[in-house]
Length: 332
Image 1 (cartoon, rainbow, N blue to C red):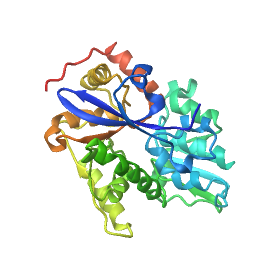
Image 2: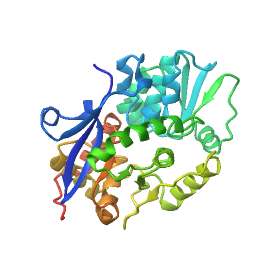
Image 3: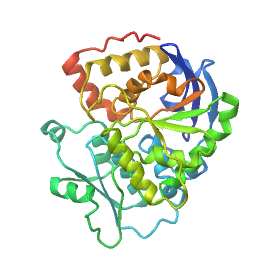
Image 4: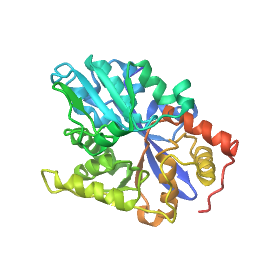
């Protein structure tokens, strides 16, 4: 398995052309062998020296969130253990479990709740993180303390916020912005879009993209929640900071809930583009993109979120509720 590389791929859906940035290993053989890839960029320099098997766990925007630690993995800060919190199929959870392995420290992860089914038979990201030695704590009170930033770590403990947020998270997104800037002119890219959970990735990318607008849409909470998160992050920014532009649709999708139209939308996206998208973040984002196509216009880039293995249990839930997905033809 080689170090990760990133492909820029021509795509189209419902008469809307865009460029997709995606980790090359997630592309099917037909696209890898075809002519739709217009640019391929090598792994960032901070990936050098990291065993390649870790990049199946540290992927998507988590690769850039953890760039500071990956670059300094040979001389990490004095750390006894890593703590974080979030959901049971979090991509950040899996990425942090891999980082803890690389650093040779324990990883403790706090969940507010876990279904009996997943307790009995862990799958997806949860199974992978447990296999990497994660210590799981199902503790709603401790989870609430961590969300309120009231958790007091012991000496030597390193605490990451939900989504792997930390003080140096902006470092990696400056590197990502540099890569996008290198290829933007040749590919006619004028705008960049990525979904937002906590909004950390979109905020820091927007701050580093000086000549392009960054668009996003909330997938966790609503637009008011996301704007409040951006405002809070800006208060702690050390320099004036460009803000992401928030797109919203006519319907708010509750995080992790199942919707027949989104199940059909992911099938149509895969049929039209030949590429699988994450169910939790990518697909609700695409529902809003299709309602806001005029705002994006022509010459825009979509940042694929990775996270395919984290969609395993959600895909199972969709199958149980709605059966096989039938593509929904989207009008132009």
